[in-house]
Image 1 (cartoon, rainbow, N blue to C red):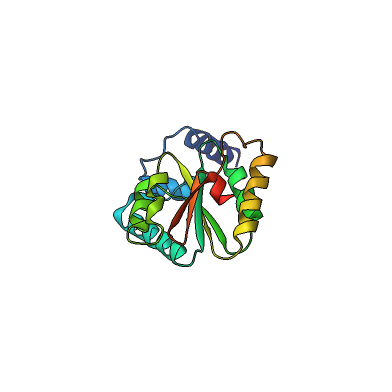
Image 2 (cartoon, rainbow, N blue to C red):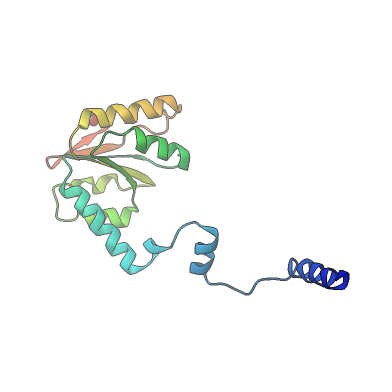
Length: 163
């Protein structure tokens, strides 16, 4: 009995130092979490453009802010503070360009520089802007993360116009 226990213990100890076989990116993602890589495939990009187009169709206004150096937890806090009917999303500029092509929001293409977070507002524009301004004030981001601009009824607004 002691020999069996000793062999099982030695086998378990040895297995701890063995390398695992090579796994693909998708298998590692399933195991360790993280991005699924969906937005890097052509189908994923088409799906993202379609999602943004659906948001645009139901929005009264869209506006953008810089998204660089905002942490994931800050982003989640911001999303929870937004009123119902407002969606915040970080969208690659090329995908946003494709989504707004031929829409009333096409003039937003001049704002497609650098990493941006876009706000798609269905109903309460004032509450959405107030929530964002409260967020940047609470997190000390007034200097670096002010509103870049927005579009409403085919009219492009600068940061002061949005506010």
